[in-house]
Length: 269
Image (cartoon, rainbow, N blue to C red):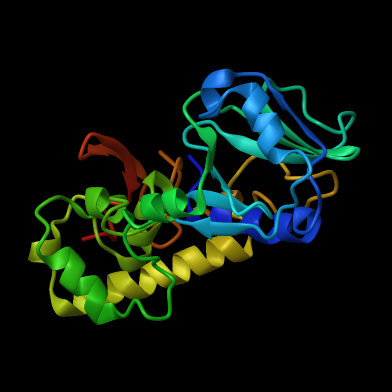
């Protein structure tokens, strides 16, 4: 599932391509991926321009000149592609938004969605989410205050969107590895020094992953050499059996809080 780095990478790359451009049409391949009728969706979007591309947690937000907002959540298996019909990958498209001869293809939205909201509705939905991990105002002290009272595992709490916005399965494991802590540890059992380490690791891992384009497998557009660059830099996620880059012991997969999790039992404590 795309997480904060993947969606932030999409936001940055899409802003330079569709911000200010007028929508010329839409095509719906799966009605359940939108929250209004296909006819209304096309009527509400056609002729409107995308003012900018924003991100909140794992969502992309597309404010329109009409004042309404498109909210995209890719969830498991979702991805997007921007380009011509000839360039588009041979994948089933659930929603297509046209910008003249170029299109934004939403692919794999079996669980994900692209919903149209009034601005107030979109804001209300986003207010339910926790703080952004990379927000300059989200200090180490606030981080410890929010997590210390929680009784779940580090894995479950780091991925709790009401607690922190944008971290999921992949980066919760990568953050714990970077901090030298097992994902199964409990926040209330951590020392302040360990909390400080976890906070710094969270910010370093998410910043690095964003810089390298996240781990998504498919380029966003033809000639995109950035998207997916972090996949080869993952230290533990989906690396079961591979030697730990820090101590050489094999990476193991365990179920933590009913989620698959990867760690090194040699150098994570």
